[in-house]
Length: 287
Image 1 (cartoon, helix red, strand yellow):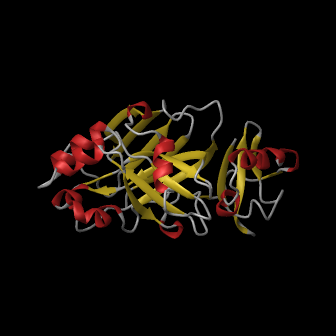
Image 2 (image 1 turned 45 degrees about the horizontal axis):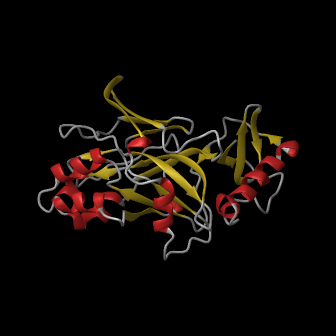
């Protein structure tokens, strides 16, 4: 089952579910529990969350699949991200750095991962809407990432697709500029759905694909696998929640293993397509 957030033409943002039988309204079944993603994730037991959704099947109201899909994040949720979790990412960061590249090698091998704040809900870009590149950056790339959906207790209850847009020239100039390289208008896209984690999906072995098209042609394409991550998803989640509470749950991007070559930078008008096996496909244009 996949959970998504959508814009109802009369009632505003609501939660829906996608099954083999179609698209259905979860909020109509239980307006309190399924009022929002954050109210759903406030439950501490993942199994209970899945059962809540499954129990609503018999009373679904069908919805129009053409209604606008919203990012699966709201309320007081936060989006965080992990860096340098793939060896390819470590090498790219060391190569782009104008000084202090050893920092990336050290964090790759350290017990403590690199974690940083990415966005609050109102800054997250919806599927189909444009992401942006900074006007004061000369080198910009998308970063396709398996994104964990964490309940208030810090447990992984689902996964979605994330685009951690990055200004490589700004971070490369000085690692202390990371917040400016990562946090700006249009820098975070997530969606379109949350795939509830179950025995059918192995988070440690998912194919991740990136395609960037420009003027009707493929400008870059690449593929990797979450099996190449140095750290496990549960390890990253544990570190995020170690001394930081998230009463409404959180999203955690797990790092990228797909790095376009140094000669490539995004341009206005490009289209970024990120596909993760068994999770979904996120498509955004570039403003």
